[in-house]
Amino acid sequence: MHVRVRTLVLGTILSLLCVSAAAQGAFPVNFDAVRKSIVFIYARGADGRTQPDGTGFLIGIPSKTKHNRKYIFLVTARHIVDPFWTGCPAKNQGIVARFNKKVFDPKTDESGTVDYDLPGDPTKGFKWVMPNDDSADLAFILLNAGKLDALGADYNVIGLSEFPKAVEVGTMDTGSQILSAGLFPGASGKKRNYPIFKFGYVSSRPLEKISFKGCPNGREIAASEWMIAASLVPGNSGSPILYVPAAGGSPSVGPGRAVVIGVQSTSFIGWDIAGMAPIQFLIDALKITDLPDLDLSEITD
Image (cartoon, rainbow, N blue to C red; front, side, top):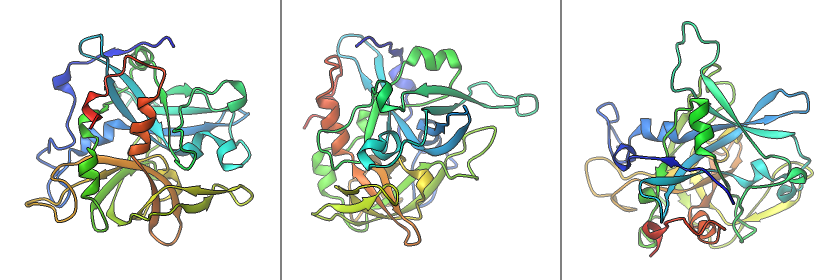
């Protein structure tokens, strides 16, 4: 696989725990760093028009052989990009990842976003990577960082240091404080992407799979999920779910730092409950990709 990677100065990558002056209160997290890692996903129809479809987020993984270089991946929910998995009809002729522009003047520019085309039709070559476990509602794809820079996209990546260790995952349970950020159809901006933050708690870590359908006539999927108590909606599908310790003291449930713990999967409309694909599925899938240059030492227990 031929890829291009972006040269990054490690000191410029913003930590989720690097709290800005404005980010005070119960969720001590760098909201700007999270916001810039969020990507809005649009479905392109046969007529070329795009419609909001879901959310993704960017992660950056170091190269083993090239100093200060990282591979950039877009992570989202599998049901957004793989209709065959849900048994639902394909609703698009392609998928678009929409980024904010680095340079934007709201007084003169008609649009403050740029589009990065992604493969979205499994019959025309499918480059999305899925976990081996078919019960995981999670997918990711390698991006061309040179193309992102040429488009003038403004973005930040979440580093592997913001992934939890296995021992940290073990400390989380019902009551762990979480947040997410993603697309909310109709209220996330027209000229720019404005991710909507949602706040809540882990409500359950079931030891059995949870069933849902991606569409009324689709197949019933038995998915390995955590249950999240938060007012999440379909446009949030693919959003990162972050554990965030309570401000001002040691957390009662969970580690003492902010970490990405999963990807939003399905939403149970009207019940303020959503399913989350645990981050371990992403970690396991990264370990078996055909990119031997990935340096995964930070997440190797």
